[in-house]
Image (tube, rainbow, N blue to C red):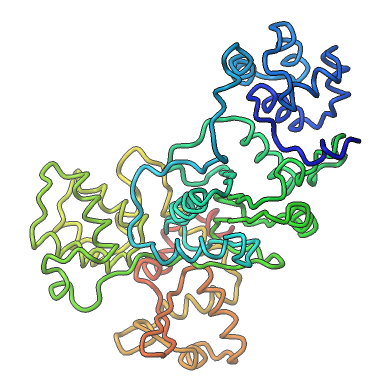
Length: 454
């Protein structure tokens, strides 16, 4: 084997990169592709390495037949092989998808992620967890965009069911490579038989830093040996994962994303024309998009502050509630949410966010111990009880459990996002958000049985 070939990455030639990506996707060596297509190994090698950039029409047809390409993939290969295409390869490293709207109030989270995912950041696997709809995908997009701006290639893979509030990148060689890496983690290993020519993950990605984002990953973690092998083969690889629950994988850095901050104090005290709180700014931005009249009055701001507090600053819940302003008004919205914070969780528009179902599912998947603690917290009545804030000693008194046992269960509730921490004045205090409390109290009659039993 030529040592020079083992260090080569994906070809700069569009047609060569596509051929290489499709070949690797179905697990063929260059020799096997040559046998299937009746094209010489040397011709295939020259195409993939960029030494030949203008193959004949019949060569492209034979290659597409051998690779079993569908209509769209075949058309893309034919377009890449047309004269004049060779010099029009997009410059720069692969980029993440484009976010359509600016991100509000997540500067600290994004800067922390960027710092930890940097080549010298010390973290290889960062797992962004939190309640459904809290904005994990949007934060990952912002962090990936910042990392890409510093020159690091970004590979993005969205699992089925992941949030799609962005413009996806066009299919191409890099997306094919990303799919192959993800399939290696979840299906059959990186490769049951390594392709000839040193085409391992390290050969394809090179030795430089690269970020792989797995958006909306399933709760089932990939096998530890496959994950370890991928990180070992590509020393510069950084993994950013978003999901509702941790993997509990070796070396996993858990990054809990909480809802947006909400104003402290009374709504009237904090609504005097000040929209500096991220949750209030986000909600009022949604209001301006929905209502026919763009002006926001002082009374509107006061109600917006109250709504943000009733919904705990949860971005998905705020967006869903704002969508109801097509048929309601802020005063009625505010009054209804004061009685039932979960009343407007279903988005009124054409979106199929299924936020209510997702949140019920998250509660229903809790193990028996943490779920019993959450039920006890939500059942505690009165303003002077643990309902409005509690410490670990109060939790042991409420549940009768030991300190270590309550600590472990409280930690699991924190990582799930179903309990929020408040460390003001150096005191560790916790509370159950009003939205979560409403869902837990309604779960026996309001939650679908199939979902609650997940």
